[in-house]
Image: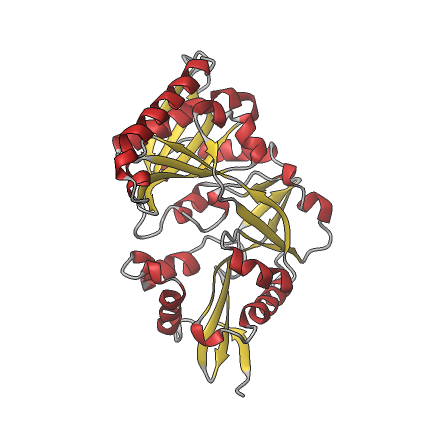
Length: 366
């Protein structure tokens, strides 16, 4: 029996083979820009890292052929005022020839050991598929908590149609209209004359004044926070095939940013959606979160989207009162997984859900 070899990914020599494995593992992406070499180069070779590498990539080989792949991007997090490089693990895949050989677990152990040697403080991941959970656990990952996904329907047409119940569309929309109307009726109105909004596309990040100042203040309000800045956003929103909408909320008195959101159009299981990549306000302005939620809904209606989706911590969803704006928790949470390497970080603090403020922007999704 041939021996499985674990090693660092050889770029660019093995890129074509890696792309073939990607299509094999994610056949639903065939024919989309995600499978292109341009997308790979954006994701793994253009990250604005302070670390010496723009990505960490490892493979499993059998008879010289790549049968498994494991990657991480060196995101930065601020933890109680100190900056750490972490490995945001993504694009983990094992091909058909890897089945039954324990490749997922072996490659996971090897790759995270290499990340530790690179000086990475810890690694993170956001699996939603239940079948990968046992392999992650065997590789030493911990599962401190889950992150809910919330949704708000604008209309039910496509959702009902994809379930082959088209005759129910009128009834479903009547019930939805009654529900949203009831929510709006009991939603406490707050004067918003002190707040104004600005609108940008994802290629206009440099035009947003004082955005880095907003992020700096937001970071101080969160015990553990992704190191967001204009440079990071330009990369995160820069996938060749994707376009995002950015809404900024400012205080009229001093013109300072008090909150912002990023979202884009996406289709989920045949339903046209708006996916919210990021959403945050400064703590003292969280009562104005509904302004940004209404802007998202307004864009959803303009783009004929039927469902708004966002991944958000329970605590933040409560603070932003998203249920009062018609959002419901879906039955599809994401598992937040973590593997710690730097033992100088308090482990209990790191695994405490209350210290985190995670959304899709913290992952590679959306």
